[in-house]
Length: 146
Image (tube, rainbow, N blue to C red):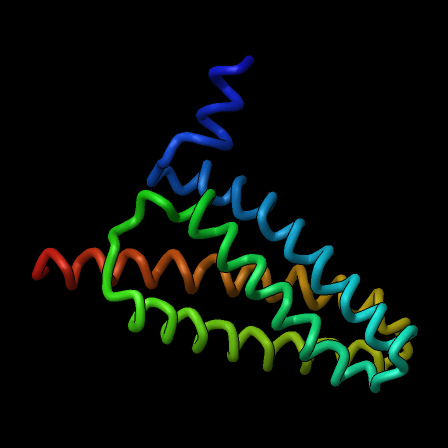
C-alpha cells in the first residue's frame, strides 16, 4: 500500500494518468481556496460576487501553481522561469475569463452563485490541465530542438 501511495503521490512522473490524478487532488485544494475565498469576500466582506470571484480565483491559481510544481509537473522539462510563469499567467488569465463568464452566465440563469462557481470550476479545471500539459510538451520539444 505504501508503495502504491508513493507512486501516486510522491514519485516524480511523466505518466499522464498519474499526473491527472494528482491534478485532481491539487485542483481540489485550490478549489477549496478559490470557492471559500469567493464566499468569504462576498458574504463577509460584502464585495460584489464577480469581484470576489477574481480575488478568489487569484488565490486558488497561486495555490494550484505552487502545488502543481511540487506534485504534478515536477518531472516535466524545465525551462526559463520567467517564460514559464508568463505562459502560466496567460493560461490563468484565460481561465479567469472563462470562470467569470461561466459564473455570471449560470448565476444570471438563476443558479445560486456558489453552485454556479462549482460548475464553472469543473469546466475551467479541464482547460487548465490541458493547457499546462501542452505547455510542458511544447517546452520540452523546444528545449530539445525538435
